[in-house]
Length: 247
Image 1 (cartoon, rainbow, N blue to C red):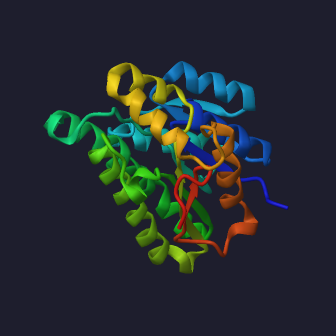
Image 2: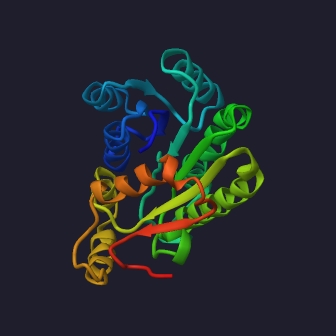
């Protein structure tokens, strides 16, 4: 049986992040729900008796403040889930520097920044679970998502390297790669690009389980990797995609 721990979830007020926050709370952990959308973070936190934090992962000072507040109000962070993410479907040659910088800042630099903020304490306490939410786009590529795929591929490689560096301290680092998942971000992507609907429909038809994923499909995998029982699993990349990609 897993012991109660303190969990910090970025993007914790969103579709997948909210489901992860609920699953960790159901496993007995105290959860800090950190999200750019302040009201969403507070709503999820209220539901699970956690704390809600406003967090922009692209801002170093904001990350440090969120971690400090979590540890002051709940205790040292044992479990860190980097779930904050963002993208739009745009052909690569139509992207620009501003779009590229935003995608990389949120999806790659953000998790690196948050990990740096929590990892030293985990090393000192010789226990920790780092779980990064990447994407199957980072494993196999995805049309109209070149920059996002690159960022998520980088996050997968980052997780493996951290796993090697901190394993001797009793810390694991793993990556979950959702496939096509029905979330508010998916609706935003569809609204921003008429071609997105066609691409997404083709992807959905290719899923062997014949349905889109839902956030509740992702959350149990995170809860398991956060548990005591998963301590000998590290440096791994797990796709939760209904079989859309297989390795």
